[in-house]
Image 1: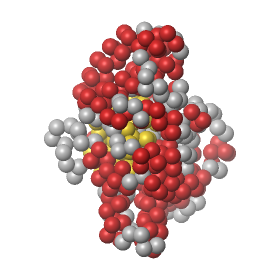
Image 2: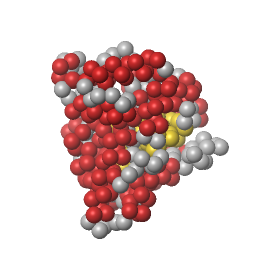
Image 3: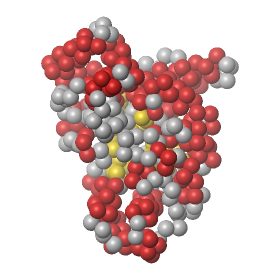
Length: 369
């Protein structure tokens, strides 16, 4: 299928810089926080995939140095025009930005001017919880501060969702019965963060906004063993878990089938495929297929997890369309669906599902286009 005319709402990404980056391209694509050797990064699949795709849109040879020189010349000549070229190439119409990635933080207004399209924001709860834990604020007092600061942040941005990366900090084994008394008695970080995760869910329930949760692979400071989305099962079965819309960010990859399974079992669980596309490279199609195997297709949302440079947002959309098109072609050839329904599925995944879920958008922004 040709999905070039399908509009894209990037359901999960981060800011990129407002100026031409100084670091070489291969250093901007690693998820590792370690000082990885240049030769290792230059021989990575995601870097080689980026070069190949850039050669097409920049209309140059696929030679590494030629691509890098062309990219440098175009971006330095007119960076806003270069950004526009990339976003227009994949028909990216809007971005849902998680503002919690500190290394990518830029001025909101300047970013919106740069991209010249819809931008909505997600507030990361660890922006507050990390500080409260670091300062050893007593759980009960901390909850009062947390609720006040979250409310102010959601109104000020405004935010269309909250985001938790508790999986990065202490894992996803959330105890739905955690209380202030239990957290105070335990005195450990996992119980403390568990308490604030539950409060985040309550706030989302009260505000009528979704809770996005990181449930997959990520940077090198993450323990993948503790980030299987199945660890959330006790929470999802609890009364609170049944009353909040929860988005499994990054499709749980490499536990993508598990993420899709949870969405198939729980009416208010959704799956976002960011980071899986494009950073899983060879695993992209397998991962998306695993999600689609059981997850209702009107609960799957495209995202890039783009960060630092606009090429990551662009590459995600480009590869995302290629992967989804390939899967839909397989279904059409098998006689499972026809092309009309295939296009409907693509529109749902790339745009409509995220719009439908994030219905409490800023006043006056009911329309995406």
